[in-house]
Amino acid sequence: MKTDTADVHWNEEWATVDAGSKWLTPEADVMAWAETLKPGARILDLGAGVGRHALWLAGRGFEVVALDAASAGLAEIDRAGGVETVLARMHALPFADRTFDHVLSWNVIYHGDEDVLLRTVGEIRRVLAPGGTFLGTMLSKRRLSHERKKALGREISRNTWVFEAPAGSDKNHPHYFCNAPELLAMFSGFEVLWLEDREHESEGSYHWHMKAERLL
Image (cartoon, rainbow, N blue to C red; front, side, top):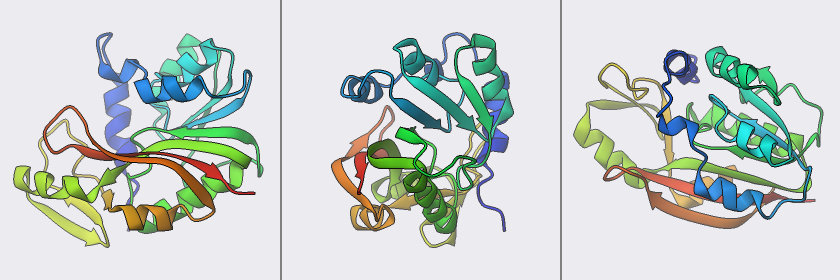
């Protein structure tokens, strides 16, 4: 069973994104992280969407590659220009080992089951140079009870849930929820530098925010 199917939803979302969308505004954590990076560093934006981070980072002199499985988002980035785009899946990155100084993946890699997640983290580790950093988010298990109150859900495999969500939501595609020990185990080969379970805009919308360094 294919579980990394959320790009079907996001392809439709990116085809109709409007000028006031929150998906066009860079996250504060990403902007703060960028301040710590060496000028001109090579960055992979994994799951770039319509380019809110890739375009912002490129505008500040970084060499950025924007990768996504949803072609409509990449088309928006291409229209803006200045960033290389790659259509590919997150668990099969078409890059040589140690290609990037840093990898960013914001609200992306939890779209799949544990097998997809483990392969994706392995690919992130592979394409990162030793000492390079990963900045990203994952869904917290603390969020799961809130999601189950809002919609009927079922666990299709360990920690992987789908919900009977209304039209316009991606929750009917598989999402992976984890606690801290599970997250740390998944990121074998990394030194976790920062980890926070943070509630986003809506009540119960907990995400892990993390920065990790690829070990030598």
